[in-house]
Length: 390
Ligand code: CAA
Image 1 (cartoon, rainbow, N blue to C red):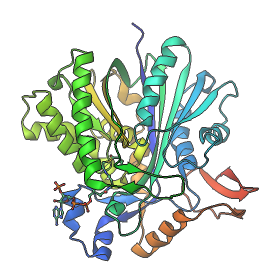
Image 2: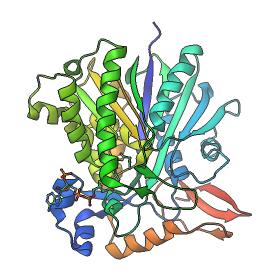
Image 3: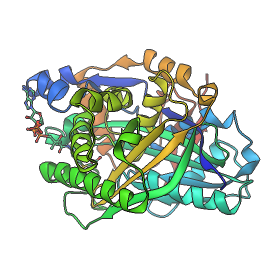
Image 4: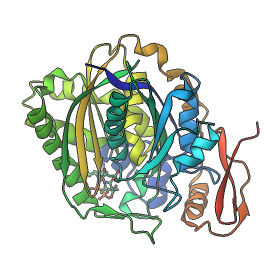
């Protein structure tokens, strides 16, 4: 059978972050609530000229140098912080990256789940046209109200994946387990810049979804929990994955100890603990974290759990390809973190207020991002993107 899966992967996040100790101090909260209670250290905050489009273009630019652009037949852009209600954000990226015009571009939405829908759809497309590839870009800014329980779970990031036949990183196995249930736990009406969250209910919905998806995966395939070496979960914050993983292990009748279960997850949590929630991108930034922070995963099976509030969950697994380390972007990822700078709580408040603004008037933005692309202006109510000047 044709092997299809992830041929290349890379991610981008902003060059600036707020330390959660600063947030805890400003809000009069015990810092351990963030470091231990939700398992997070920092959250990345986008600059004024960054948005899901510029971040997505930055993530994709890192992998395009290593592939044949002319084979990209489809671009699937996944986000829940869309910049337009009609035009697919991926079209801006298609232009910035000079992708072939004989290409379809579409935007997918189902809260944080859509990148995994994109992986499954892309595998189907490539199976039908094995000489073609699909570029998936998932990009989001997690923006909550000030002083709300969600404030400490903000963040921003984008990930790009190339899906291809005979992939160089991960063969996606065909079996998948899904669970959809209409749940009122987290949503963002069109008039609101921030989501409405029923926090505890959202965490319980996530955990139930992980268990139901695992059950469905085992109905659809013969895979057993203990055959899987490492797991990548959707990470609104890292503690939720640890909790869900323990419950899934129980459903899967795992013989692993608590320490073994923790070590199956730990390498995948590291990047998220510094970035914060990146909604659609988070499951695959978690995969980058696992790939970059593990010794050798060759031929090992990796489990993926994606969850989008509202809600849709999905569990699937893939097998790591021999030689995968040759195409990883580990050095670039590490350099990105090393170049980051901390911002003060006051700067965070200013940037938070900016993110709340309706950008409906024509205006120009100065260059603040350290990335390759920026939002340069709003002109005639349309977003104008540009390559950054060095
Ligand atoms: N030291 C150590 N631990 C502490 C502590 C301290 N001083 N103070 C509190 N804690 C612990 C609490 O005991 C709790 O742990 P348990 O859940 O194990 O009991 C944890 O810290 C969090 O404390 P609270 O439950 O009191 O926190 P909260 O209600 O203020 O906020 C939250 C938590 C509900 C997750 C909130 O951050 C939130 O609403 N976030 C946004 C929604 C979200 O991320 N939901 C996740 C599932 S939905 C999803 O996955 C989609 C998505 O991306 C949004």
